[in-house]
Length: 151
Image (tube, rainbow, N blue to C red):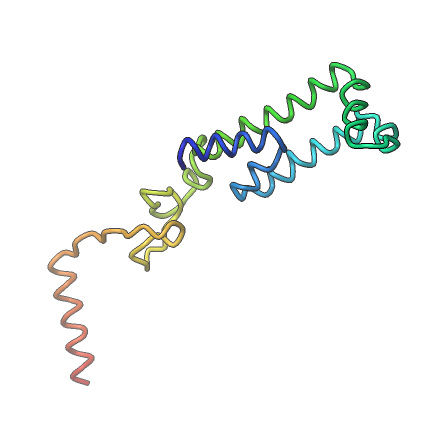
């Protein structure tokens, strides 16, 4: 992914924790960060006073003036941590999941496990070069097809 896309994902996740992960289709992390942010809002914000406010501007005034510094720090920490995590995930740090625990060959482009029967990666559609077959294998395959035609 490009740097620009990673920065956009990080900025989006800074505004709404979990939104950057949703853009990356990392649903578990998106719901975790979004749920953590909403749960912190329900526990630490004066929800009754915010709900009783007449306008959105009044509710934002109450939310910013009636909260303690530690609560503001908590919201900032959750948003910043979500943004940093989303940015690093968009850049591919750490490398893709499953690259270390794959049993068979892996794709040189995306690092995911390959299906040996296909000549391309079914994850990222990268064409794969097949290793050249030895002459003995090729001759055996030709003889087997000739015998099947004769019968």
